[in-house]
Picture 1 (tube, rainbow, N blue to C red):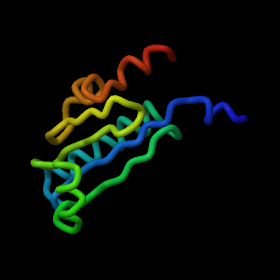
Picture 2: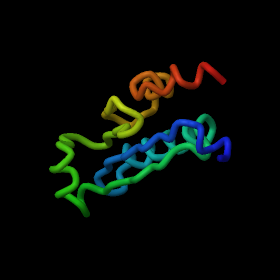
Picture 3: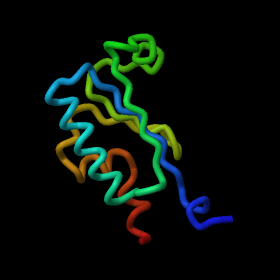
Length: 101
């Protein structure tokens, strides 16, 4: 078994509404955090609610951009452009797990 498979895997969904500045900023910030802190241990799915309104409805997304951490539990959500890195890490419960490095 490889070392990578022993690590937690983070499953994230980012809901955006088209290519707005807020959506672009949220995606850029999130990718930056993930590539620096969680390289190789995350899956990110970007969902455009304008193209897939049924997905937003199923997941009860009321505002964009919204970031949902699906795995590991518990599910966490952050609404906004994700510009505050610490708020993103704490809000998604990612900070605690990175302290062990």
